[in-house]
Every structure is written in structure tokens, then in C-alpha cells.
Image (cartoon, rainbow, N blue to C red):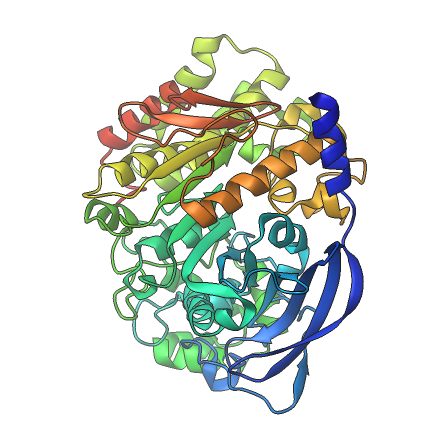
Length: 548
């Protein structure tokens, strides 16, 4: 049996190869993409650089995106456009669709729409090659771009610049999918939104947003949720408000006089500053917080996030959307990759913990630090630098990722008439990973497996892995693609067992989750003691990071 599985995986690992150009007619005009052979009579068509919005430049900077117009003739769609952290005219998307010649089935396919991460500051679609996922999963995959940094999220907390333009870009892209994806054999009424890190937080926020209702049917959130302390700005509660960051940007870009006049004058001045100057100035802004400077904001003017995410959850927002949430075991180890282990002492851990507590628990920071030290260090009798480093990673991973995911999972299954919810922890370490052993399974480790990179041999996401993929890596990638596309098709990642396991939905009684490791296994009570610890702190101090 093992020999049979290995043989099948090796056969499946044959790379897609270029076959020819392909022309497709859409409502907007003709597109010329690329057709790749994926097997006898099977192909993968890709169409890249399709505009879904008018260039958000000039008077459209810091404004809601406007739909793109059509074109005459045939538009080349065989290459990516420059990313939104490099050029302002960046609102394009890419479509990957499996094709049979001659057609064996004309029925519409489920659609998966990917939102990249990058702390709301960086990211681009070019590093997510969806050919393998679309081909092996028999789904249509769309990867979308959105404005980043100040251009995507600058907010003055009033009508001058409400913010959330990056989220509005994503909503417009979903509307484009609704209107156009049938031309690519995609089902506009069967759309799964999925993303990683800040992209996953965007998925989580759109799941709650009234402006995105009806635009997608299922959601997958990899390492990011709306309840994450870094995910969304909460005016009146954050120690530095979005308006203060906007004013700092004005002072750094020569708009200091406008800052003193009015928010309208500030935004008008910033519209006339070049993108390069804005990007450079953004890097110069002093940020004493861990959260991104420019990020989604709770606001009512545009109504993208009309209230705090926790309040929206308790009002049953998004309750009809089946969802998968998950985390990686050692998410925040990437923060310390360049830090000498000798710097990890009890004194430095206390200092870092105090700065962290000052941001999220102002006025009660010392009490919170004392509890953190007692829970993660004193109770475990830690004494070495290596142990202190591991504890620092665990504290940050728990607070930023694991605890918010579990709390959002719990809230979701308490909603009235809630749809099915799944939870996972990714614990798989590839044999030839470039990640040091002490860093474990860091943030982003699952992405190459979701996109089938062991099969495509592309340069892996974040260069986490070299080209030396093993049969075990191929098996893991096939399992991930199968579960993710099963969920897109059926709302169930394992309608038939995958890796010998059926993924049990999460409930308050079972608290089941899937451990995605060298072998798949269903477990219960993810990080239960640490979730209980942080829940107690949040309850004792009034949950300031959850409700503004």
C-alpha cells in the first residue's frame, strides 16, 4: 500500500508544462492567457493581470475603488502586474482554471479567492502560484491584490479619509468574481475566501462585514482572525490612534502645515505626494506598538467594519458562513531569527513583556507582566537562554495567534444557527526546511503545501524550503490541497477520510481540532491551559484588546 501511494505521488509530481496561448471572451473583453498541460487531455489555463478596478491614483487616492472598464481587442493576460507595495496602479487579479479537451463536463466549478498577507504593508500575488491547487483540486482559483500601507489603510477617523480602502479593494474584487467568473467556468454562487496572516484577518473581517455579505459562501483563515490584537485598529482604545499616524505621515512628507489646518487639508496634501515619498515616510514614522501602523479600522462612515469584531460576532455576523481557522505551532519564532540566543535573559524577557503589556493593557501592565512571568517561566523553572527564547516565542504566539483563533472559534459556534466551523494546528516540519530546529513551525510554514509547491518546484514562499522535497512533503501537500478544495466543494474538508482521518467539526463540547503533522490526527482542547490563562487576564482587565 505504501509503495502504491508513493508511486501515485511521484506520478502526480510531474510538472505542468507550457502548451500554448489561450483566448477567452469575458464581459470586459478578450483575454489571451497561457495554457499548461497537466496530463492527457487535461490543461490548466492561467489569466494574469486582469484589472478589476480603475487605477487608484490622483483624485482616487484615499477613496473607495471604482470598477475597471472594458477594453477593445485582445488583452494580454500572461504576466503579473507590479505589487501594491511597489506601484500605485496595482489593482489586478489572476485566474487559474482547469480545462479538459475535449470538454468532458461543462458544469461550473467551485471558486477559491486568495488574499495574501504581509502585515497590511507588503505582499503580492506573484509568489502564490495557484496552478497546482487549481489543477489537482479541480477548482477555479483567483488571487487578488489590494492597496497596502498608508495607501490602503490611512484613516483620519472622519470623512476626510475613513480608511479601509484595502478591504474595499477586496470587496470590489469579489464583486468582479460575482459578475465575471462564470466566463472562466467558475460558479459565482460557490466562492470560498481564503488567506494567510493579514490576509486571513481580512477574510475574518469580511466575514463580519455587511458590505461583503453574499459575495462569498465559505472562509478559510490561516494564522489570522479579526480578534487578533494586531488585526484591527480600535479608535479610543489603542495607545496611538489612526489619526495620530496619519498626522505623523503628514509631518514626514512635507504636509506639516496641512496637519495644523484640518484633516481635509492633510489628505488633500497627501494626494499630491509621490508614492515613493509616502512609502519612505511610512518607514520613518515612530511606532512604539507591535501592531501595523496602517491597518483596518473600526468605522461607520463607509461601514466596512461598523463595530468592534467581537460585538459583530455576538450579533451573529457571519454566522451563515462555514469556516476553517488555524494556526501554526510556533508562529512568532520568525521574530527572533536574527536575535542571538545570549540576549534572552530573565531581565530582557521582563522588559519586552512590559512594553508588550503597556500597549495592550495600559495602566495594568506590571500586574499582567507578573502573571506572564509566573505562567510561562517561574512555574516551569526555566533558567537557560534557550528556554527563555522558547518562552518568548510561546507568549507571542499564544497572544497574537492561538488564543484569538480559539476565542473566535468559540464565539462562532455560539452564534444563533451557526454554520459548521473547523479548527486546526499545523505542526509539520519538512525534512529540508531552512528554518532552524529551535524555530519549529513558524508563521507561513503551511503556505507552500496549500499551493502545491512540492509539486511545482517553484521557489517556495518566503524561501522557507529549498528544492529538495521528499515523498512525505508531497503527501502533506496533497493532503492540504485535498482538504482545502474539498471544503470549497462540499463545506467539509473530509467528506471521505484524508490521510486516514475524518476532520471533526468544532463544538463547545468536543473542542475538536485537526493536528496537521507528519500524520493527521484529531485532538481536543487546543492549548487549553494557555487559552484559559489569557482568557482570565482578558476577563480581569475588561478585554481592552477585544472591545474598544
